[in-house]
Length: 234
Length: 184
Image 1 (cartoon, each protein chain N blue to C red):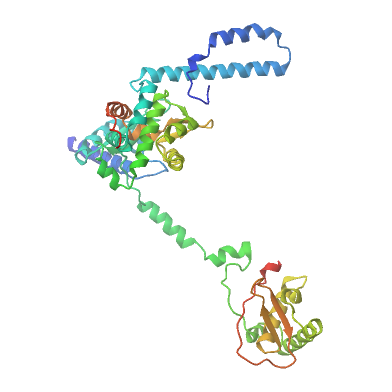
Image 2 (cartoon, each protein chain N blue to C red; image 1 turned 45 degrees about the vertical axis):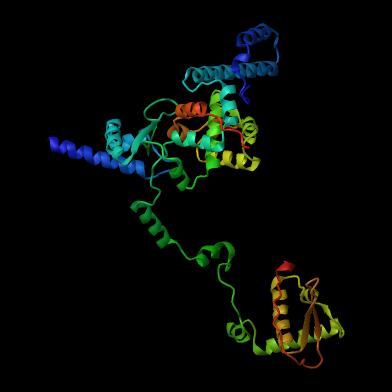
């Protein structure tokens, strides 16, 4: 009844209440009494619907439902729109910021720290834009010395020669490492080997897989820049 | 003394206009208890004066009674005194089809004693409008306050319909419209 627009007077409230009254002495269990009170609650809801129904019917808005539905079905959209517009009084209001709101916005903006600062606590340096760190800068920062860097390059080339045995091997497999820092460092050193012509890279167009091979002699020809994402391995 | 009273009244009327014209919350209009706070106990008299003052601009202050019928729960709005023309309504960016859906829905709900299951309304409207427009428009009008949907998916006319639409006129106009001649 509550989920349809059926006539609430179709339910005989008096009869249902008498039924509940007659059955009440039979209920012994708490569960039975709860169901009984639930039924009573539902009946009160129907009485409420009857009240609303009567009020609406008594109002001047009541028109035979079938008549109005038939009219709406027969009328063209334009006629319906016209009827609506002729009975419509749109609300007039200004949707704009007040001086007080403007002041609040200004104070908020003034006190707002930069994105980099706001995200620093949550994501470390996530807010800082990606940039280029060159070899000289890494030495200046003390990440490693020039000798350590050269040694690292030589060791990595030797490892690559041993693993590849003159053949192409999977790039991701080669730089693979248990921790991300080492993996990034290996990729960084490998990029130097490639740019110095001590190793070569190729990509498989269909699978987008990257292969690497060690070169005994320095490669000749035009160098080509290749960007490889390391994020996939995380 | 008289000029002081007049100046005070003018100030209060100006304040009432500013309070009504600037949207504060999500919905337009100001509740009676808020008006009392801004204008004092005699706020209804000030609203009456304001309503007269803005009539020259084609506006009026309209009261939508709240659920308990008290002045405090009423919502006061500034609205058009006379309905706009169809072409004016069109220039405001509202589609004719959307308004037709709303007109048919309000008429249908009123014919069902003020409440109808959403499914029933959708079936009724689909005889006239495409399915996608029916669902989209109903959702939109619920969001904008023209319709209300309860947790049992029953649709009622919303506070905005009570504020903006003269429902009696709408029903009378729909009934009095002659049906269009069938297209050849």
